[in-house]
Image (cartoon, rainbow, N blue to C red; front, side):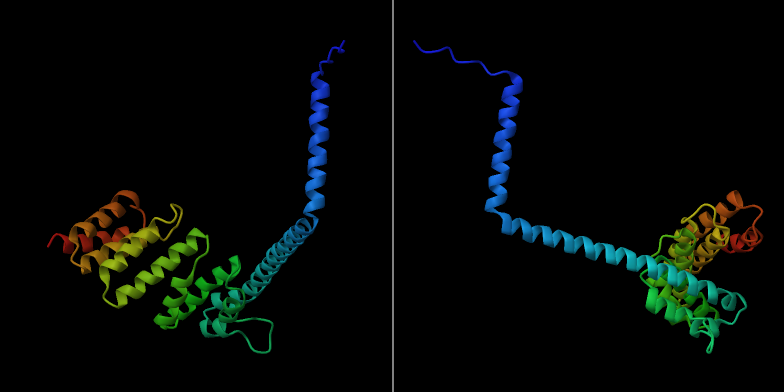
Length: 229
């Protein structure tokens, strides 16, 4: 007579599956040990490259911050050519070199705005516009400055409507930017020069409504008279 087959408990079934899985995994590793070793080596190499890149970028950003801090007083003093080229015989690196060496970092991006402004103050509009266009940082104030800089360049080329659009975009970058009323006024003036009187009127009315205490507000009446001619 055959003995009655013992019914396995849930615990025993679970343990049996665990043992089976273990031997399957072990067999897989033994059969594919070379491939696994290669993949592991690749992952370690990738991790090392990523670590090196991140660490190197952090160090470069810190170096850019240091150099920027050294040259800003020269820029603020109005010595724009010296700010661009640096002070010979000192540790003050010029803005152009900072951008060339660290332009891909956060502080290198910020240096582009100072460099563009310096060129603008010197009347070198093409050089200024090049760096305004090249700015790709995340600081809203600098993003607005870059757009306004490009707008000024376009206005100098009589591309008034395009300039107005950029001035308006600059005013929308941040609600806290003290330059917003001026950007909107310049947008209105350029729309007016482009013959877009309705858009010009919209800009001017926006200043009247939202910025009644601004310097730009004092100019609204004069340009509004031109809109209504």
